[in-house]
Amino acid sequence: MNTVTSIIDLQTTLNRWRAQGKSIGFVPTMGGLHKGHLSLIDIAKKNANKVVVSIFVNPTQFAAHEDFDTYPRTIDADLTTLSSSQTDLTFIPSASDIYPNDLAFNQDEFIHDKYLFEILCGKTRPHFFYGVLQVVRRLFDIVRPDIAVFGQKDYQQLHIIKRFTSGVKIIEAPIIRDSKGLAMSTRNQYLNENEHKIAPQLYKTLTKIAQEKLDKKSAIQQLQIHFKLDYLEILDANTLKQISNNTRKIAILCAVFLGSTRLIDNIIKG
Ligand code: PAF
Image 1: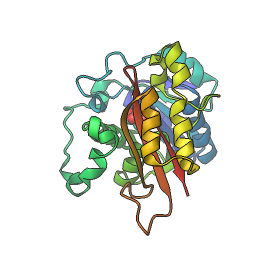
Image 2 (image 1 turned 180 degrees about the vertical axis):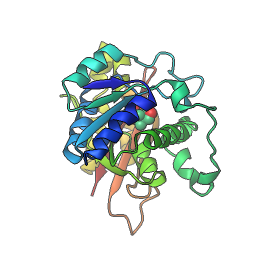
Image 3 (image 1 turned 60 degrees about the horizontal axis):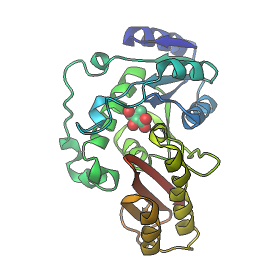
């Protein structure tokens, strides 16, 4: 596996592969790699000849009060992990390569779809999905992949990327959980021993809703025993709007705080 930091070096390799008729799969990450990321890479390899993984902690998706400065930056461990994965090329750009001019992102384009950016995680993180879309579009412009893989765990992110990017086939990867059911996330590193024991209660509660053993009101009460609830919503999985007669698939989506760590999880059913 090769590692490049400049766009020129990245594109030299990509152009060579394209000239050989190889398709390009892409897995954008912010590092802090875990088994969830490895599953995205495996899926990319099944759907493309070559796999590029980027590691870039994107400043525009963090608000000033969030954990940009302390977000796990574990490049050495990440490169070791990637070297025994299906990754062919790792791209570690600098912020000035990604944002050569400034960090501004014009949101006018989304004026009619603002609700998608403002519901669920967008309520507590109003800047977040604009920042994600900004960096994903920029990375797509640089890498020009045939396919890109994103996890179902970040369901609203996945939905927005599918809706507002073009020219790249977006593949959805299932949530990878630990043996207790906790969805893999880089931020799980923030949990202490006791919080690690409590965290799986989130998935347990969502499972009971999916099995229709618990209604929303009782589920909220159950979650509040263990967590500070951010939201619990049961929506149409295709539109992220309220369930209607046209709903074919439902999304049970939840975010909670455990101490200072924010956990998100979901179950898609139907
Ligand atoms: O899901 C993530 O890790 C990030 O939001 C992404 C898609 C790499 C954009 O920075």
